[in-house]
Image 1 (tube, rainbow, N blue to C red):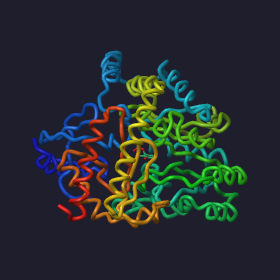
Image 2: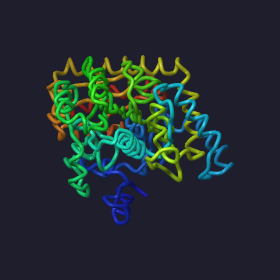
Image 3: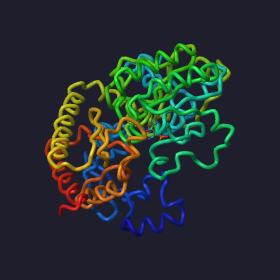
Length: 428
Ligand code: PMP
C-alpha cells in the first residue's frame, strides 16, 4: 500500500491519520511518510522510497536505526517474557547505569514516556514543596502534560495552539511562563511569587522551538534563583540527555538540578523514560511517601534490555567523539554554504543536533524562533524530501545526526541541502 492510500485509510480510524500531531505534515503540507522499515541512517517509506533520516525518531536513534546489537538483545530478551508488572534485576542495573551518567539522579523511577516522566516530576515537586505554581519557558515543550501545555513549543508552536483546549483555566493559571535567556524576568517572577512556586522546569538547551542555546550564565542564574526561593530546579533532558554529553546538559554546563527527566535515547527507541534526583525529594514517592506515581509498563523488561544496551554503547567515548567531530565538520560546511549564499537563515547548533531557522535574526528565544518564515521551511522540507532526505516536518524542532551517518552520507546531505535551499529561494 502507498503513503497516499495508507493516509486515506488512516484518517478514517485515527484522528488526522496519526498518533502524534506533527507526523501529519500539516504545517509543511503533503502526504505524510508512512515508514515501512529503517536501518542505519536510512528510512524506507510505503512507496519504497529511501531517505537519509535526520529526524531520528525525534532524537532517540543516536546510534542509527536497528543497530545489530540492540536487535539481537531484544530478540533474545523477548523470549523470556515481555512484561511482568513486578520488580526485575534489569531495572536495578538500569537505574545504576543511568545514575553513573547522571550522578544528580540519586534515586530514579522509570516511566514509559517523557510525558509521564515530566508529569511525575511536576507532581513530586508540588508534593515535596507544598506549593502549587510551576514556572516554565515560553516555547518550552515537556510532553502533553496538562500543567505544561501553556505557551508550549513543538506541536504547540507548529500548529499555533500553544495552549490546548481541555485544560481547566484554574490549572493553567498555576503555570507561569518566562522568556528563555532572560534572567531579570526570572528574578522578577520569583521575587513576586517565589513562596508559591514549586519548581522551575526547563529544557537546559531548548530543542522544541528549534535548537536555542543558553546564554552564558543563564542556567547558573536559574540554579541560584530557585535555590534562594526554596523552589526545585527541574531539567527536562528528554532530548539533551545522552545527546549533548553522555551526562547531559547538566554535565556539559556544570549546573546541577534537583530533578531530571530523561527519555528518548535512554530507551534506544523502546518506551523507556525516567525521572530522578535528590534522595530526599524522590523518597516522597509512594509507597514510602505521599506522592502517588505508578505504571504497569514502567521498567518494562524489553525497554530495560534496550536501555542497558544503550548505556553500554554510551560508554564508548571514541564513538561519541567521532560523532561530535563529524557533526562539527558537517555543520561548519552548512554554515559556510549559508554564509556564501546570503540566504536569510540562522543555523543553531549544539553538537549533533541542529535547527536551520528561516529568518535573518539571531534566534535566542521563542520570540526569535517565531520570526521564521514557516512557508519557506515547508518548501525546503519538501525540496529535501523529494531528494531523499527526511527532516523534522516542522520548523520548530531539532534535527539529529547519528553515529550511523558516515562522512559520505553527510556529504550527500550537504549536496541535498544546497540544492533544496536554491529551490526554496527560487534559484533553480
Ligand atoms: N520533554 C521534551 C524536552 C521532549 O522533547 C519531549 C518529546 N518531544 C517530551 C518531554 C515528551 O516525551 P514523550 O513524547 O516521550 O512523551
